[in-house]
Each structure stands twice: as structure tokens, then as C-alpha cells.
Image 1 (cartoon, helix red, strand yellow):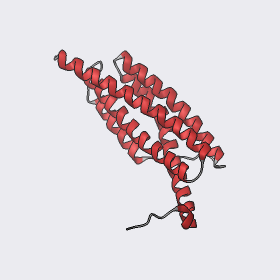
Image 2 (cartoon, one colour):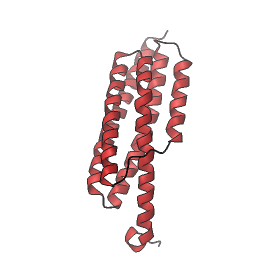
Image 3 (cartoon, one colour):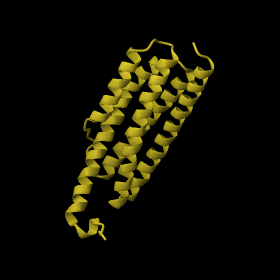
Image 4 (cartoon, helix red, strand yellow):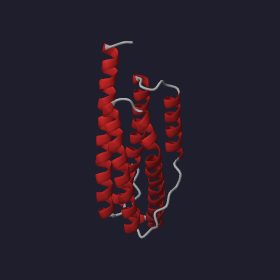
Length: 177
């Protein structure tokens, strides 16, 4: 039977986990800042009023997340820094292509926007979930509380996108062009 290694038995492990935590924090900070730049153009490309409203909420959540992340950096006594997320950049480029390759005012474009938004949300949920678990393991309870709040809101946004997607798919099935 294998024994789990714990942080307390390996003093260097905590330092390595802290660095990993900070590195991932920089990545999600870049992600949120990049999203704040691209979400308005995505919102402009959307047709459905419900989708426009959902993206508006995403913009507000993104602004809030940036402030909370800056607070986390402050609690860590670190200057807020970014580390480019190749994953998010790739998702954003795919989303731009979907918008360019679909006609304005169509269900296809809105569904492409939702798909891109959901990919972004899944990436953020995975990252914030891991950061939350790491902060708990590192004994950073105050930071864990902030990350938990962010994660809860990200899950709500993803749920709204899924509901929108399901409604759009159902209506397009009922009203084929």
C-alpha cells in the first residue's frame, strides 16, 4: 500500500506548491484581464438579448474577479503580475474565427459565442477549483474564501450559458430554416 506524501513531511514541497499556486494565480489574472478586453466585442457580435445580457454579467464578473485577484496578490504580499495563458488565447482565437465564419444575426453565431464562452468558463472553473484546493492545502484560509466566492459565481455563469444553449438548440429544432 502506497503512502501519500504530505506537505509537512517534505519542507520543500510547500515552497514548490506555493510557487505553483502563485504561477497559476498569474495565469488566471492574465485570463481575466484579457477577457475584459475581448468580451465587449463578443457581446457586440451577439444577437439574442438574453445572450447580450449574459455577456454583460460576464463582464461585470470579470471586473469583480480582477479586483479579488488583486486582493489575493496583496494578501500574499505580491505585486499583481500576469502570465499569458496559451489555453485561453487559443479559445479566444477559435471564438473570433466562429464569429467571422458565421453570418451576423444568426442562431449559429450566437451558439458559437456560447460555445466559446462555455470553453472559457470551463477553463476558469478548473483553474479556480485547483487554486481553491491549493490555497486550502497551503493554509491560506482567507484566500480560499475569496477563491470559493469566485468559483461559485463562475459556476453560475456556466449554468446560465448552458441554459441559453439548451433553449437555442430547442428553438432551432422546432423552427428549422
